[in-house]
Length: 359
Image (tube, rainbow, N blue to C red; front, side, top):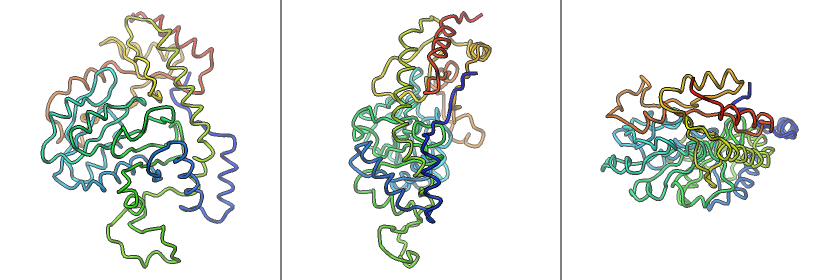
């Protein structure tokens, strides 16, 4: 079976981790600093990336800095990992579900505009499969925009500053760049120090004090920091991440160029997309049949995430039909496109897709 995901790990990762373990210091320390320095160089962002222990933590920090409180409204997409939306839920905010483009899975700016009210305090957009949302249109609403970039590693792409106000990356196990678990937040310059303080309870770790517990905590923070063990994994895999993106983009381009089947709808090539997922569509009514066909031919597949608005724990946020989400979930499927695919496997996948008859 050709797997849908695989952990990418550098040959030197074990040595870097052992070095940290033998150092006598494994918490947030010099390796985290080194990792942030390297990320800053690679991403070229105006503000230094703030490392955290997950993309979920990065999103929640963004919500906290914006000041989300009970009764506020957050416009979000249901087509994402549930982790994207838990921060707003725990803060007592009301989630307003925006519709999505039925082909790309990206949040629809026109749907967002219709939902904006005086109570709207944030928009949470997800770069599905590594493709960027229309942040120019989203930011035109005047509402702070949080960008869930968990599917991205965009060193090849456009200027970060033309994206969300707060950009949240994931370094979870199967992402392009992994730290085992982790992430970063890239935030506006005026909020960077606040983010750094809040990720460690509310303590300012830049102050050279033997006992930081004597500091006054002016705003209660969280235990969202990254440690040196995770940072050492990330440091050893930065170059491999760029290779992984290149492989996913190459394989995706091959599918787009060589698959020609009227029962399948493949994405258009997007030079800014990192293609963490190869998200495609099959004709309505054929999804289960197509999934079994792929399995029978040794190809793993999955929709990857389920629409959040259908979870029984948050039914209070349902308001009406979301035709784009419905159409997307009824036809969307993801197939392997990562660095682990051999040329023979790539040819097999292309042939299998072209040979599908729906019968």
